[in-house]
Length: 193
Image 1 (cartoon, rainbow, N blue to C red):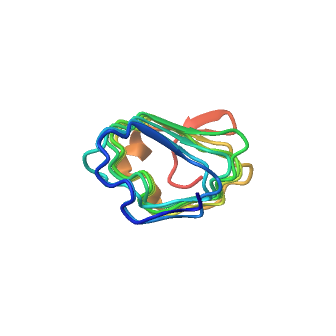
Image 2 (image 1 turned 90 degrees about the horizontal axis):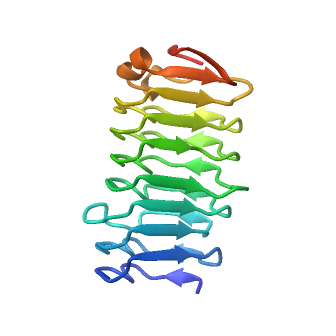
Image 3 (image 1 turned 45 degrees about the vertical axis):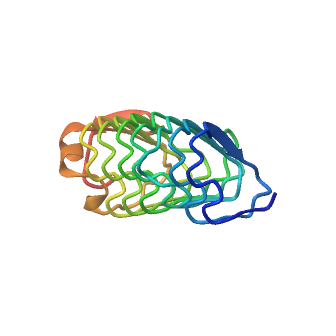
């Protein structure tokens, strides 16, 4: 199987989990839209895109396999998502805009080594997100990546040579309430790190 057609599994209410293997090259838009009983997803394909309907899903767990290189606006408004994991040896280079926007139940994200770019509003409005871990490979965080994440308490940055970020990456409540941990040293959050 190399291709999954547009809306191929649309309205498959009996589908509870699935895995997309590395040999899948293309997946059509909304291929899995309105599959209301899916709770677990696993991806090994190179690129993960907009294949789901954000409403009416019960996805609680997502595993991003080590062969995934980019994530598009795939998981926007997955309000039941509590467990986001990245497989060891990750090849993930970019998380694009709106990828995890409004994933309201997500509390912790440990981004994988190899990740270089976080897109605009990637984790925008993740209301319960408390902890984010930024890998040493990260080279860019775009505007509003973590805006409107009022519960954010700890930001761990393992970046050996910090780069400038725009003040809009985090919301003002983050600057007031979160602790920035830089290479193991905790300090009060600053506008740039």
